[in-house]
Length: 141
Length: 383
Image (tube, rainbow over all chains, first blue to last red; front, side, top):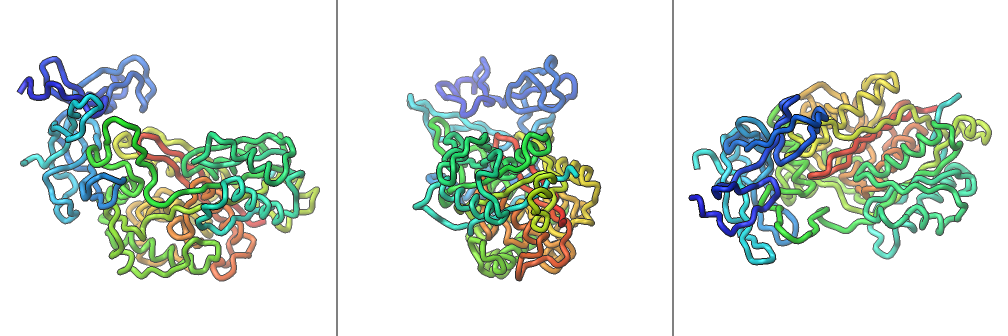
C-alpha cells in the first residue's frame, strides 16, 4: 500500500500524502472553541483565537448531510454525478463527489453512511503526473 | 427630520443587449431615475455605481461620460449579487453621515447566457471531482437541507416558479412574461436536483438607478409627494456557520440581517406588506421565508402551498416576477428590487399592485463556493 500513490500529485492543498505514502485529509482544530475545519489554518474563523489551532487528520467515515444530483455542469464536465456534503465522524464537514451510487434522489438518503477513498482522478498535471483525489463512496461499498 | 428618502427610481426593462455597454445601460437607468425625480445629474453630489463583471473598469466614471462629468466623487462597488443593494446602501450611509443631501445610486450588469463561473484556471479541475461549484448546485443543496429538516418536496420548490412566473405576466419590465404550469416546471430540464431550468433565475442584462435624498433636500425641493422613506438599511457578511466551508451559507447571513432590520425599524415581519427577496433559485425562496421571519420554522412548504405569498395573499413575495422571471443582472438586482417595492408604496404598480401597501422589504444575498456571502435588507415605507 505504501508506495501505491508514488508519483501522484494531490488534487487540492488539504489532501496530503504523509511520509509513509498514505493520503489523508488535513484538518485543523481550534484549542479554544473546539471547532474543526478541513485544511490547514492558523486562526479560528469561529472564535478568532490566534494561538491554539492544532493540525489534525480528519476521519475517513461520515454521513451524507446534503447532496444534489448534477445534470448540467460546466462545459466538458461529465454528468450526471452526485455532489455531496458529508459530516465526518470525529468532526469536520467536507464537500466532494459521491461515487458508486445511482445518481438518483430516490437512491440517496440523508445520513447514509459514507467513507472517503483516495483514487487517481484521471487528470494529469502539466508534467504528466496523475492527480490523486478524494471521493466518497457508500460505507458498505 | 433626519429621515432619508428615495425621490427618483427606475429600471430599464431587463433583456439581452449585446450591442450596448454597461455604462450605456447604466446611463439609461440613471436618466430615468433622475427624470422620475425631476432632477439633473448636476444636482447629484456623489455617485455609487454597482457592477460586478467589470468591477476593475470604472463603470461609474464611464457612466458620467455618458450623462455629464460633473466631477462628483464616484465609488465603484462590487459585492457579488448584493452589489446593487450595497451601492444603494453606501449612498444612504453618506447622506446619513451628513456629507451629502442628494446622491445617485446605480446598478448595472451585462451577462452572458448559461451557468456562471467555471473559468478554467489551469491545474486540477474540481468540478465533478470535488462536488460542484455551480450556482444551481449550491442552492440545490440548500434546498435539500430544508427537505432534510422538514420534508419539503420537489413539488413545493417548483411551486415557487409557478407563482413568480405568473407574477411576471403582470410586469412589463420582466425579461419573461410567461405562465409556467407546475407540470411544465417539474418536467423542464433538470439542472441540479431539485432545481430544474425553470427554477433557475435568468441571466440577463439590466440596469436600475435611484436618487436618494435627505429630508432637508426633499422638503427644500418639494419632492415629498414622490418620496418613499428608507426606514432601514442593513448589511451583514456571513457569520461563522458550522458547515459553510463545505456548503456556502445564505441562511445565517440572512437571519442576522433580518434581525438587525426588524430591530432598527422597530417593527415585526407581520407589519410588512410585500417582499422582494432573492429567488436566484426556487429553492432559495422557500428557505428565505423562514430566514426573514415571514413564517415559522419549517412552515415554508406549507406557506407556498397555501398561496400566502402570491399576489392577493397574506404577504405577497416577488410580485415583480422575481429573479426567476424578471431576470437577475447581478449588479442591478438590488436596486431593481427597491424599484419594485417603491413602486407599490407609491401605488403605481398597475395590475400587480399590492393594495394598501405601506411597508415593503427588499432582500438580496450574494456569494459563492469558497467566497462567503453578503446580505442586504432594506425596509421602505410609504410617506
